[in-house]
Figure: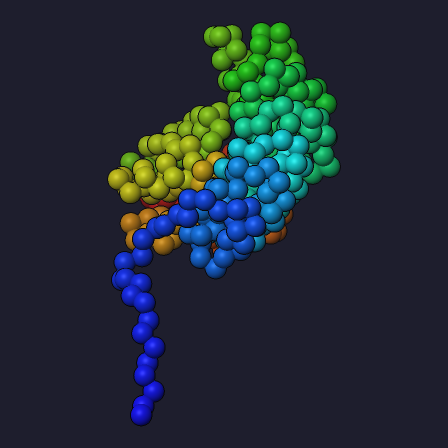
Length: 209
Length: 122
C-alpha cells in the first residue's frame, strides 16, 4: 500500500489582509519580529495601546527596512509619547539613515512638552547637523518658548547652516522685537548671500504680520 | 525654455533657488517633499531636479531612488543639495542616483553653472 499524501487545508489563492482583533502584549511583540511585513505593521499599530512597548518599538525601528512598517512604528511612538519615546528617538538624529531621522523628527514635533526638556541640550550639541535637526523639530513644535530658543541660536550660533535654518524658522514665528537681531546676522556673515536673502525675507514677513 | 523642479521643505530656500534659477532663464516649479516632486514629475516634463536631502514624508535620497526606477523620470539629471558634508552623505547621494552633490551654503556661480550644464542647452 502506497503512502497517502496528507490532505492540506485549502488556504485559497488570494492573500487577504487580515488583522487579528484582540491579541495580548506578548503576541504583539512576537508579531513585531515576524517575517511577514503585514504582520509586523499590524503589530506595530496595535502596540500603540501598550506604553511599555516603547523599547520594543524602538529596537524594531532600527532593524526595519519596510517603509509602511516604519511608519506604523513611528505612528505608535507618537501616540504613546512621553520621555521614554523622546529619549529613544534623540539618538536616531545621529544616524546616517535620512528616512529614519526625518521620521524621528516628525514624531518629536508631535510631543512638545516632553521634547521641550531636551531642546537646549540639542541646540548645544557638538554636531551641527543635530543642531539643525533641533531647529527642524522647532519648526512644527507648538511650544510657547520656540521664538526664544530660535533667538538664542541667532545670538550664539557660529555655524552658517544652523543660523540659516533658524532664520528660516523665524520667518514663521518671529516677532517685531527680533528684527534687530535678524539684521545683525547680515553683519556677522557678510559673505553669505543666502543668509542675506533669508534675513530680508524673514524681516519682510514679520513686518507684514 | 528649460524647466527645473526645486524640491525643498523650506519655503525661503525654495524662493532663493527660484530666484537663482530664473535669472538663468529656467522656468521654475516647486515641491515641498519627495512625494509631491514625484507627482509633479509624472505629469510634466522637467529638465533638471534640484533636491534637498532632509524633507518630511519622502527624503531626497528616496526621491532620487524612486526616480531612477521610474521610466518617465529616470533620465532627468538631479542635483542634491544638503547641509551634510561627510563623504558618507555624498556617497549615499551618488549611490541613490544623483548626478551631483552640493554642500550648503552653495557657491552661487558654481550652482548656476552646474544647473545650466546638467539641464543642457536649448
